[in-house]
Image 1 (cartoon, rainbow, N blue to C red):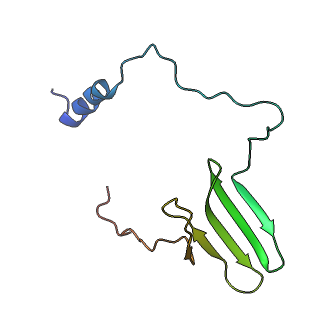
Image 2: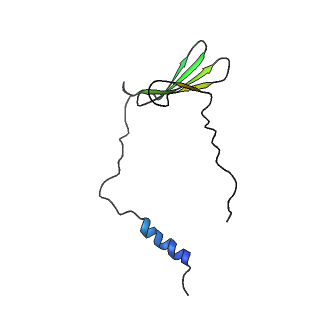
Length: 107
């Protein structure tokens, strides 16, 4: 009796996808220990004000997004999309893209 084709393909697919062992250790970053240094700035900074709050988001020390939360009104975002320091207002971070959610086939 011959084994089904799917079982045979499944067994041989593991041989094809397996990576050869490498002599190089994985790239692991050391975990810093001790107190934070002066260069360790938080990625998020909250600044309270009289009219509301401003939350600053930074990556690699560069400001890329602000979330403005006024005392009266809806919060909005100021985003530097190109990295040139010009911020554009955006009322929400929702892109509006909705993937289809219907069932194609059930097994």
